[in-house]
Image 1: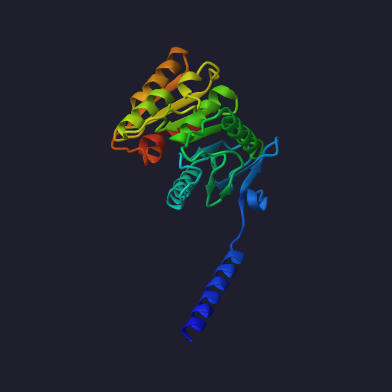
Image 2: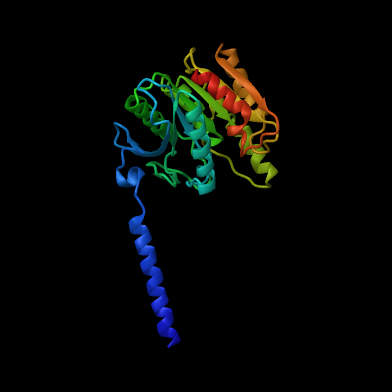
Length: 274
């Protein structure tokens, strides 16, 4: 009798899961939902979440690029992103898109491309993919200007887009940026007692093609124990040597996890949007 009850309970549980799955609204690339995905001329699809949908045509567009996570953006991180970008869009003139990086899966959907479990993802192909997705978003929303707002690996990707695909971005806020890959990875591995290097492109090596009119604000948290300030300082110094409009801003008390939403980062974003 108990076995029959167990089978009956298991069947009910399976039915409940099926009903829940059926009732969940598919979105992003998986559903070919144009409200939550963008397709590039190359045919690749990228999922996103949009805040500030009521802004007029020609409004500035801010594109938020999330940090690393082995191909997955956790629900808690994504929820915080949506909360912060939603508040920022409500308070300012810009639309803000939280764009899912290549190969990553987020609650809003999965994007095409490749994401490695070790996060060594700042490749020429992935940078191209993000540049093409951002260009498609600019066209869709008829944006007057496009500003990247990158966190950690998203900051490195944004910095690389500025140089390798000039004109895609007009400005960028780079928060918690691993902007000098080789020494950053050496330090990270040594501090964790590991070995190994990354093959990712380094923003520090890619400043020569950044347009003179681009405005770049690099935000470093003084409590960030992941991407130390010195890995941003060298990048900023190279940009200044080229005469670029680039500044390093220290965010007191900010950690690697929250530097992207520190008051200094938000102030920089507001200034670039205006």
